[in-house]
Amino acid sequence: MEKADRYAAAAKEIAAVLKGERNLTARMATVSNILHHAFEHFFWTGFYVVDPDKPDELIIGPYQGTLGCLRVPFSKGVCGAAATSGETQIVDDVQAFPGHIACDARSASEIVVPVRDAAGRLIAVFDVDSDRKAMFTVTDKNGLEAILSAAFSD
Ligand code: SME
Image 1 (cartoon, rainbow, N blue to C red):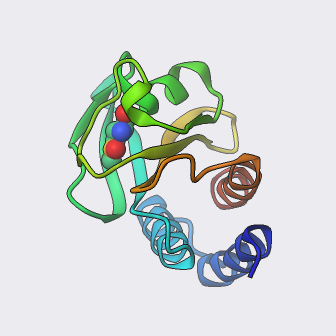
Image 2: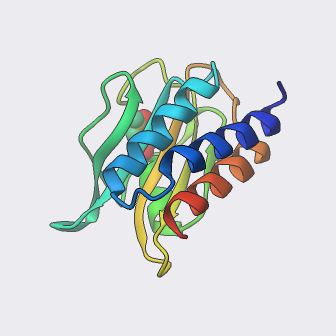
């Protein structure tokens, strides 16, 4: 299946499973599970949420894959860049990204999408890592942004 078709199928599955469920942890766990298993090149797939006690720091949320770092300050890494800019970040080679945080040395490329609530407030970022370089394109950006917007900004 083409990437865009896989995103469309995952979006349908996520919408069906989440129908009527408002709990944020349940929604994040479901999104990370379904997306992680939809693509072979997703090595780490999950959420860093804005810490209510430290609003300039992200804390680990629901995820799939190898052990993630617990905290990422807004000032660091690809996740921090997505949180501060409010824009999706695509990094073809994480080694070349200044301030990249290596939670697992096998991560090679990465996409991070800001996640907003219905009021437009940043609540989290969604991070996908691949163990191969340059695995993420505008197709991933469009697919992930659509799924995250449907799951958290409706
Ligand atoms: N690499 C990320 C940190 C999170 S993990 O890779 C799971 C970053 O630089 O923000």
